[in-house]
Length: 189
Image (cartoon, one colour):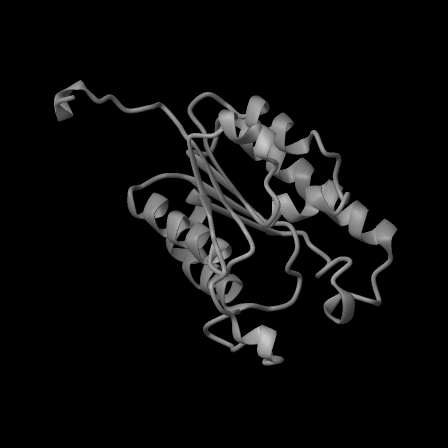
């Protein structure tokens, strides 16, 4: 097939999933690429409530992009993650935060106002039961036709793969956390 025979899509659905590191980093790269092309972007964060480097970066660039960038941080921290769990946050508080964050994401995706909506860690929120299992399908089907969508986090359901255009599984080959080393600032957060 010749290159001329290929066509472009009005919008795409991108998934970054898997046990390996790099899902959020890939989504921030996608944010940079979309803003660099003059797109209007929404970056919706589902889990991380603490201050991380990507949040600082987005806050720093926000004045440059003005109304072309919506950033919403709605998570309450790790849920059901053993010693790393946000222990001072109840299950009801986690669920309320995830539901509120999903409402922001759904509104942005359905509005047609954004060229891309990035939902970081949404897959985790669904997998852990913080938002209903049908939430991923709902946002995929409910997005505006010209709005691209990026869904990140572990455990994206295999049954939804036929609904997406690009899916990348981040596979961990080695991570120093397994050797009892904590995350490194600037690398992991």
